[in-house]
Amino acid sequence: MNDQAMNDQESQPNAADELWELRLYVAGQTAKSLAAFANLKTVCEEHLAGKYNIEVVDLLVNPQLARGDQIVAIPTLVRKLPEPMRKIIGDLSNTERVLVGLQLRPKKTSQA
Amino acid sequence: MSSAKSGLTADKPPLAKAPTGIQGLDEVTGGGLPKGRPTLVCGGPGCGKTLLAIEFLVRGATEYDEPGVLMAFEETAEDLARNVRSLGFDLEDLVERNKLAIDYVHVERSEIEETGEYDLEGLFVRLGHAIDTIGARRVVLDTIEVLFGGLSDAGILRSEIRRLFRWLKDKGMTAIITGERGQGTLSRHGLEEYVSDCVILLDHRVTEQVSTRRLRIVKYRGSTHGANEFPFLIDENGLSVVPITSAGMEHSVSNERVATGVAGLDEMLGGKGFFRGSSVLVSGAAGAGKTSIAAQFASAACERGERCLLFSFEESQNQLVRNLRSIGLDLERWIKKDLLRIHAVRPTHYGLEMHLAQIHRLVVAFRPQAVVVDPISNFISAGTQSDAGSMLVRLIDFLKSQAITGLFTNLTHSDANLEQTDVGISSIIDAWLLLRDIERDGERRGAVYVLKSRGMPHSKRVRGFRLTDHGIELTPEAFSTEAGRT
Image 1 (cartoon, rainbow over the protein chains, first blue to last red):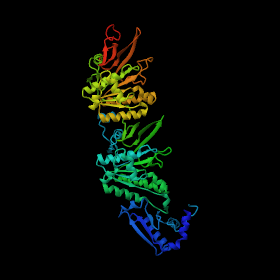
Image 2: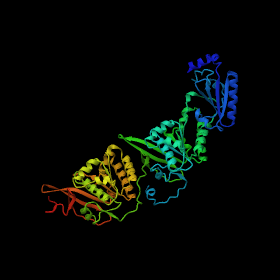
Image 3: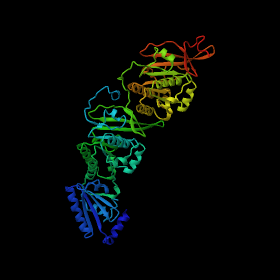
């Protein structure tokens, strides 16, 4: 896992060409959802500028979509691409953990 | 439970109930689960809680026109469908007909990072969507505690689960929430604190290699319920709870008499035979002719056009039919007409409660007017003596509540006191026949007498008893000079 994360980080220049496809699941415009979106936007601009795509899925509008990605918690951020799929739940307020979750930063050994 | 059976007491249910459709459970709960409220069904692994929950949905969909949603946290829809197919439930068909929706919820901790505040709104959305799609009235969450393994914030989970139960109640869903029994608690994460209306505990015990499933209603707010443990079965028809404890004495009694099948015996019993719905015990040593009397009685019932259920714990059906042919009794014709059903099983095959459950289930299905158990003494080998006694009391109470005439044979040891039943049920027996061998002048003779027969004048005489190729014959005296000699 650690190796994988390391490689990801090291191969970051290569990943430059890759398009990041992110999907943020929310349920209505709640404070948590708005915060999650804002936090995500900040992280992406800083680390993935120009090569990311965020799709916001409002489950109140499209409830049937919750099943496909096994959404339980809200908000949930799903990294569709690059594979493998990753999920981060919560309002994404802890940037460090968002980066770890997206595998933009290796997981600290203490957390591993 | 005689009330549910005979309908003698018309209890007004203090709160609305949703019938589960599960055999026996609705009697035990006085009508079903609290309607529009969640019920917690808990127990250890393999106790049958998922099956109970699924049957609740299946019966709701097929018998009460109440579609249901199954939210499965442990098994996929395919696995569940496969597992319950052997019980005769076709989940796929119900899903196709929009009677059932199954949503498999899977949370994989290793692929999830948690950061900041979240809630379980996704679960609510999924459940709400499934409910609205099929117009569900019932919901099963099996087993929501699995979420504690997938998500780390127990505080959020607790408050969200509590909110979920409240939300289900607001939506008027009759729900079953399953929980795995924890150490000293009913469920691992204390779900019982949130489900205040009804809690059912299932239990699967194996004692001396015999397995027994039991169900107990731990709590049912606002409703009377049986506080005892009730045995239940899981077989090809699903679950069935045996709603029998000590059934009480509310059953109605009949003045009608039924022939014993032996002319001489009828004569001894006031000339007319047993009371319908009474319980008869036939005791005797090995080879005394107990099974023959039992079979004559069964055959006489069939001759009247009644149905008879015969439980044979020593002989197989074929053996029984063959042996009785030697006294001129043709049981086969009754079997062919489906007036007689013989259920042969070894008493040690399963525990007493399972026997009781089996007998109960067969009686409910066949609706016989007469039941023969040959012999009851064998039950002792399937349990302790006091267990056997209490089981027989329950069996007899149950048969009485159904106005079924019951005849039980009991093997006594020739050296023991014949007038003492091993299992101590004499007090609840209405008529008691004793078969014994009498020795005189170096010859053994069969003899029969009526030890007691409640509510009728009966002969006090010891009469000769013998088996002939045309049935049982009674002679006026056991040792008269002429009669009885061959």
